Each structure stands twice: as C-alpha cells, then as structure tokens.
Amino acid sequence: MKGFKDSSGKFRPTDNKKGVRKSRDQTAKNNGVQLTQKRMKRDKVSTAYRKIKELEKDFERGLSEYDFDNKHLKNLDWDVNVTYTGSHGTVDSEYFTVTAVNTRGIGTVETHEAFSNDDWSQGMDDDSGYMKKLDEDSDFAEKEYDKWLAEMLDVYKEGMFQNLVTMIEETYEEGHK
Image 1: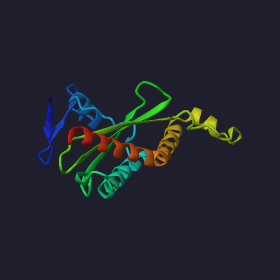
Image 2: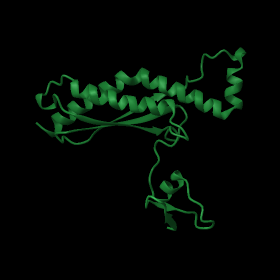
Image 3: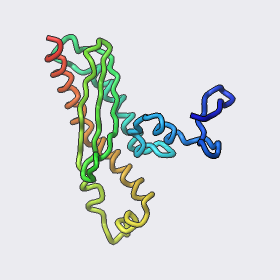
C-alpha cells in the first residue's frame, strides 16, 4: 500500500493513482475492517450514537451494582459494548448486539436485540408537510430517523438490560457450576 508518514510519524495511505490521502472509511474497507457504526456515525456524532455510548455506561454501572443471586457475580466491574449492526437486509427492524465482559473472566456474554422500525414516521400530521419533507429531503429524513432511533433505544433500554442480566446468569450457571 502506498502512502507517506505525516509530521507525527503516523502512516497515511494514499490513492494509488493521484497520491491523494484516502478517507478513513476507505482505508478501513481496504484493510478488511467492518464499519458497523458507519451508518450511525457520519461526519459528526449522531444522536443515536451518543445514546449507544450512554447505554454502555449505564449497563456497566447497572451490572456492577446488580444484586445477582450468584455471589461470584456480585460487585464485578464490567465492560459493555453496544454495537448497531443495521437492518440485516430488511427494512422493518433494527438490530443491536450487546456484549459484556467482567473482570473475573467468565467469558464474553452476548445478546442480540432487535426492534421494529415500522412506526418511525407513523402518526405524523401529513398536513404539516412533514411526510413530504421526509420523502424529498434525504438528509432531513436521516436526521429524523436518527432522533427516532435514539428515542427507541431509550424505550428498549430496560428490556435490553434485563436480557443481558439473564444471559449473564445463564452463562455463568452453565459454564461455572
């Protein structure tokens, strides 16, 4: 791969034809890195992306304070990652993966969450021109969808957390009797 080192000594890949620096997304694609958050994080941090980061912190704190029945699971520090994995080729659901790892090494616990996006623009007053604007302005529609997705993450937060707790308890019981 052609490139140059910048003033800090970091390698910067370049386009093979013109010597122009490639975008971070293009470089990652060429290196085989999956950009699971690409839709969520464009030029600036989206509302839904900020909500995901907030969920991760809340889930970490919640798991550390959760009163598990199993004494070995109590008072552990947790690292939680919530990954938006997209619509998986459908247009009627949004999918997320919630992964948790604790300091005692019971292994990685993972849950998969999905919720319908059928109603994201339902109930809007068509007389206001909102629906027409959604149809005509893709940037506006994307921003509105991003706001809606953040709101839905807030609605599903408790259920996602409870699914994670259940999966942790089941994993620990199965793997560490």
